[in-house]
Amino acid sequence: MKTRRHTSQGAAQAPRDAGVRVSGCIPRGLALFIAGFCALNLLSYLFGNNANQNVWWIDFWPLPSFISATLQLLCPVVLLWFVLRPRMPRWRRIATMSVCAAFALIALYNSINFYVLLTQGAFTSRFPVPFSFLVCALFACVLVSVARSSAKISGEKTVPSPRRGSPFVRGIGIAVTFFAAAFIFPLAQTVCFGLTDYRQSVDTVIVLGAQVYPDGSPSNALENRLLTAIDLYNEGLTPTIIMSGGVDIDNVSEAAAMRDYAVAHGVPASAVLLDEDGMSTESTAANTTQICRREGFKRVCTVSTFYHLPRVKQLFLAQGISVITVPAQPYRPDTSEWPTALREVPGWWLYWLKGLVIYPT
Image (cartoon, rainbow, N blue to C red; front, side, top):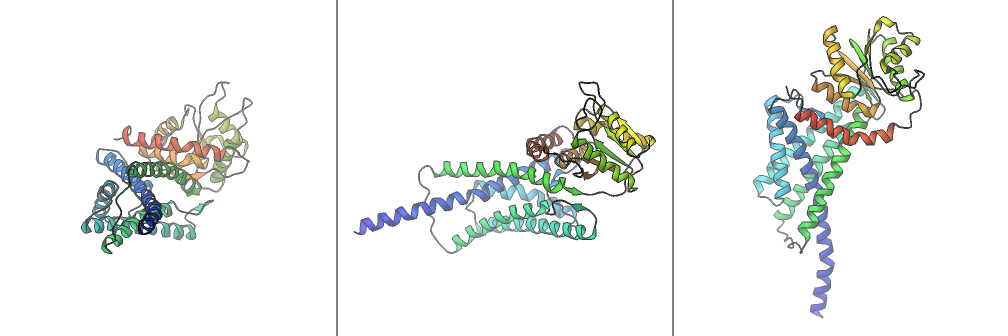
């Protein structure tokens, strides 16, 4: 009877232990993602990239630069160490928890600042949830995991040794969490950043092209972009508009069709500049940057569909211009928006990697 009871209790305990181990894979997978993302951004910046892309996910202002630099250096170190060696001595637990707490508090401050500026009318948003909330949650998850591990050790609770095969299961759990974070991160960026309208007075507005029909009429997506830019002109926020697009297989110039549409809606032809070689987002950024420098435009705004704007921001940063972004307003129904937003996930990573590797100054 004793043996049977012991076996029964052991069988009941094993699934709970396995569940605890699997749940511990989530913070380690998140830590691996954050560590890799932060480290690559920082290395690119240190080796000559013209912009530290860590600003994409956290803003260290108003901390002194040496503090922010120290935190950015420590972050990938302590998190990667946590991934590889989750059971740690007291000094390393304190260091890991301190770094996670610092990042979580900074992200929380960013979130509060978002709402302060939103209340003050500095910008508007169709999705008034800051991306900083997600960043805060990521670090809080890792912090809680490390704190719970610390509590178990200090309470002298023995942890059963892993069963055969459990390292493989934990590895799969970490990998799944890592790739889930890699999918959600740019998608959340696309929604949170893309749906935020930062309009203000600028020297010019760049409108990125989209499909134009053979008769020269714009598609709904392009019409929304054009009407938004026309609104900015009518509000007195810009004296000029740059239309950027390519020439399609029907020999229709997107940029010329965009200009004709704007002129038909009251914008003087003299206020419109053309980039007819904007065959891609990348070429648009390069071409219109040259136009802006030639014309002496310093403050620049870009208008496109919301899912496009994070990638647009990346490419203009790579050209050395920090543009403000305004999402096209939904004047016309566009059923392609959200399916295309999902497609932007690999596109976001592609252009992020290009920003790290190809565009250093």
